[in-house]
Length: 236
Length: 307
Ligand SMILES: Nc1ncnc2c1ncn2[C@@H]1O[C@H](COP(=O)(O)OP(=O)(O)OP(=O)(O)O)[C@@H](O)[C@H]1O
Ligand SMILES: [Mg+2]
Image 1 (cartoon, protein in one colour):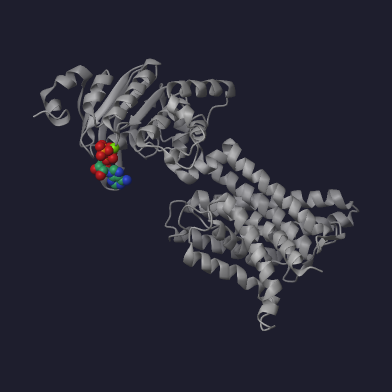
Image 2 (image 1 turned 60 degrees about the horizontal axis):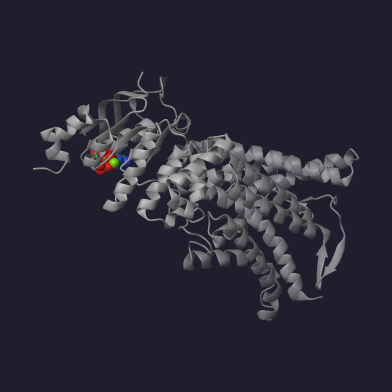
């Protein structure tokens, strides 16, 4: 049984069909990436899985059908989306943002120790606990978004373009953190413009074209595929 | 008697009431960007229910203190139910409608509640039975009644409690999270409908207490009293920066002071041409000035109603 299994997913914005008959799976402990051109439907797919968009088709998480469950109910199952643009709460402090990540949890002691772990993983956040998150740089905001997602103890973490708008050094840092998160046993569904990095990090990948899966292969095969190299890895 | 001290004290009492009512407007606006015009009528309902309960309690021979508490609780319970019902049946179905629709619904709810109150309690002013302590004191040159002291103590306590709720509790964080981004709040597992309902319940409870206190202060209530009180509290919320909790409190207190000082000094300043009956004009004068020169209010971070 796959941890996440999406079949014939269809999402439309009014009359614009953004995702048409998409299938994808993520196994327990697996890291999978979703790459594709601008407007291919990557963000739409993640939002639909998270319950933020009405959709057709079937989505199963941990053997349970998500049906048309509201987003807040899906979040409680351990399916956590870090949205495009990070979605931190700018007028809240770092600590409060992290507390929001643990909003659904009632195990106060474990939340406390998770907070310590997040601060250990992301020392920059610990230094600036009481600062308003809106004052942070893009990279720091992305770290905060990752830390906040960890506070929910995700079983499957979905990241929408974590490298967006970051300087190259910061991209390396952020991907280093994502790698550590994977090593903790969290399953990953990663949407990323930087296909090079994504394919290096993940075991499998899907190439999305016009709202449907064009290719689905192990990451090293995709990285070696001439068509993928030409379209997404910037090689002529 | 010291006129300045007196006007400042009166202004603080009045302003603390405005502040508590303004909190209801600002919390709902902060979360839904909706101006709940029926909120003023909720204060009126609180006053009316309390008067009825006190009337019955006195007839049954209940002593004053338990009776006051009973009346408060009854007013709070009825107002919470009203607030929840209005949110659930009038506003929630319009959550994603164009902004004008809920605004018009809000005005409709306000008129509906006025008419319901008129049918139940009639058109006349109804006296608030003198169950509150009726003592009078001198304080720094001002003439101060027990009821005024009770108002100050109660409202300050409520403002403190609400601040703690919003700043320190998961519910308060969820409210602020929704105000900043509703979809992201949902991604954190926040049930938006539940938090919105809680917001209406809390705002309505505050309004109930404010309504009872106002009626006790003036010794009477009237089915139309919520209109002016609501409009002034709304002005106070805009003055402080609508959507901003601290702003509502500051705006309320300032507006109370402006009104009271204005009413106290407008006569001498205009050589008797304008009297203290112009008191009500100040609130709207302030509202217009704020909207023209600082639409985001004193502490506000965002722009007011764009519809
Ligand atoms: N809110 C919306 N209303 C209408 N159309 C939309 C909306 N959001 C996205 N679309 C359209 O749906 C399609 C898929 O968009 P989506 O954002 O999922 O693409 P993406 O793969 O995430 O692109 P990018 O790499 O630019 O983030 C696009 O054609 C886009 O124009
Ligand atoms: Mg996208």
